[in-house]
Amino acid sequence: MSAPRFTSEAEAVTYIFRSMRKLRGHDRGPDEKSRDTTPTVRLLARCSLLNMRREYGVVTGSKGKGSTTAISAKLLQALGHTTGMISSPHLVSWRERIRVNGRAIPEPDFCRILGELAPEIDAIEETLGPMQIFSPQGLFLAVALRWFDENHVSAAILEVGRGGRFDDIAVVPNMLSLFTPIMLEHRAQLGPTLERIAWHKAGIIKAGSYACSVAQAPEVLRVLQAEAEALGAEFTWLAPMDMAQVRGQTAHGLRIALGRYVEDIDLPLMGEFQAGNATLAVQGVGNMHGRLAGIPHGSQAYVQAIRRGLETVVWPGRVHKLSETPQVFVDGAINAESAQSLARSLNGRLTAPVIAVVGVPEDKDYAGVYREIGPLADTLILTETGRNPSLSFPAAEGALALAQRSCRDVRFAGDLDAALAQAHALAGRHGSIVIVGTQSIVADSMQHYGMRFEQI
Image (cartoon, rainbow, N blue to C red; front, side, top):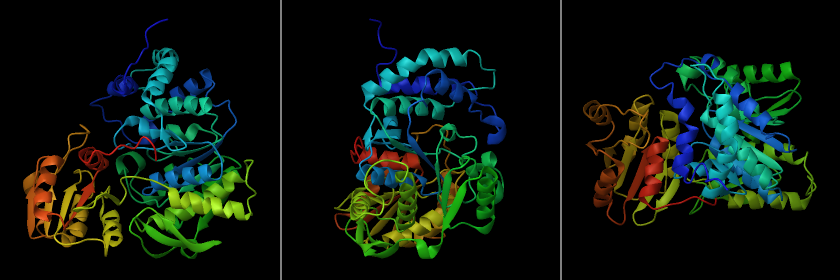
């Protein structure tokens, strides 16, 4: 028996990003010119990775897509389906991106499956031109599909990485497309206008399928509707009156009411925006479940399963409480709107003194985050992370001057550990620490507090 090709997650991930590294230093331009799903499509065909009958739902948007993916997967699991899930980015381990019934793919299986696929990957890669690459997203998808096959997954919810039309996730034959709020983002890759960004997102819709969106700007809804009509797909959107109503806060989340599940439901997610994500997930899962065997759709057992799914969902890193003494919260807010939402979600939960630790890259709306989070804090500590080498942070001197417009006491720490040492000294046992920033800062926070997410 030959030795395994990969013996650790680190070796496997290095291989997955091997192809992309050859473009380092090149300006790749907009997605429609730089992203090519052909290598992934060839790999999936050669390895028969789309042969097993399975229901797929694909989720895209500008915020909330990870939460909606996780809630949808938990609902399907509660309804009795063996459920696969792909999400990105991860918090601690790359394997968190691939789950079955909430369990991350184990390291031995991750390495084994990639090793089994590697000969086909290598053969395809040898045929690629100098500016063509194997997308890491496509390779994670291939590993996930093999893992889903081995675990007899009947339904899978997949989160798009960026955009949709040119994202490898969208090559699956999904009959369900879900759209969370779409905003201006990734303008260099997706385009400068909401209409163009919505066009990218709309690319996940398949012919004859079902698509559902939360309320969007009129120009976004027009694009989504036009795409659905062109493909003969059914499209619906949820008006504000359709959304779950927040009844109040609980120690670990929100109490919501939702349609025929009108009795109070304790959703163990703190962000107020999660009520909208839960509504979209319930709507989408209802459509997908209708094509699967199991609990009758209109039955009381179905209602109870939906309630059970909502009350047991776990999605870390989004208005996530990490500690009690002192209280420590973390959230991946990187623009003014998401920081505003975080502030509303924490209203009534914070105890003085409040110390905010903020790490937002220079290509995100760090000024907007300072503006919204600064007034909450007695002290604002700006920080950085080296977890993702592609991230750059604003120069400390300029960032400090900008943050001082919103908070009197502003400091700088070179990394999260140093920032948290200061924050704990200032907060004591009875104050509150709020960590805000890019997903790499969130991941650093999880590592700092020793958290793992093998099972959610």
